[in-house]
Image: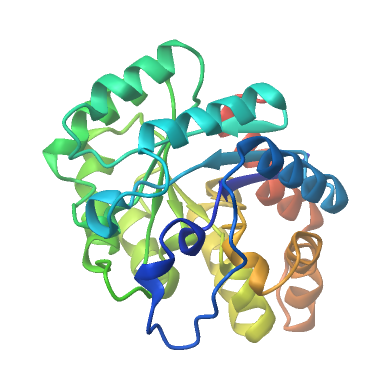
Length: 296
C-alpha cells in the first residue's frame, strides 16, 4: 500500500495568487474554477497512474494572514469532506483551520463527530505557535477521538508567512503535554531536520513526514539519502512517513516520478556504502501511515 499523507485540495498559489506577486522565481499557475468534483476526479486519476492507493486531503487555513480564499474555510473543508465521500477508502479528509478562529473547536468537533474528517492540519506560519494554549482544545478533541495532527514544519519561503513558529522547539511543549497524541511533522522540518532529531529523539509520538524531500533527492541524492538514513537510525523507520505536498510539488516532478525517486533510496544508500532495505521503504511509503490512520 502507498499512502500520501500530505496532499492539498488546491495549491496555495491557486487560492492566494496575489500573495506571491514579486516572489523570486515564482511563475503563475493555471487558474482553477475550484470545482471540487472535477478536482477530486483529477486527483484520483493522478493517484491511479502513480499507483498511490490512499491520499490524505486537506486545505490549510491561511486566511487570517493572507485574506480570505475564494471560499470560506468552512466551505472549503466541506469540499474536502465531499471528496472523501466521493472516493471512500482512497481519499481521507483532514480538517484545516486556524485555531485562533473563535469557532474553531466547535467546527472541528462537529466535523469529527459527523465522520467527515480523520485528523487535522495546522499551519503555524500564519502566526501562532503550535504550543500556544489556543491550540489545545483542538488537540484535546484529537486525543479524545484518537486522531492525528499534521503540521507544516520547517522554514517557509513566502514573504508574508512566519518561519519562526515552525522550528522544532515550537513543537516541543505540545509533544510533551500530549504524549499519546500522534503529531506528524510535515516536511520533516526541512533545513532544520537535524534539530528535529535532537529535540524529538525521545518523544515517540512525533513522526517525520517527507513531503518536499523529493526535490532534495533530485538535487542532491547523496546528502538527502544520508539524511533519511540518519532519521531511520536515530528515530526508527516506523517514525517516518511519506507525503508529496501536491499539487504544489507537481511543478518539480510528476507524482509517478515522486514515488519512484523514493523507491530508489535503497539503491542510492548502497551506492554510498549504507544499508536501507526495500521493506523499510515500503513502510515509509505506506505501511507506517496506514498504522497511524488505522487502515490496517
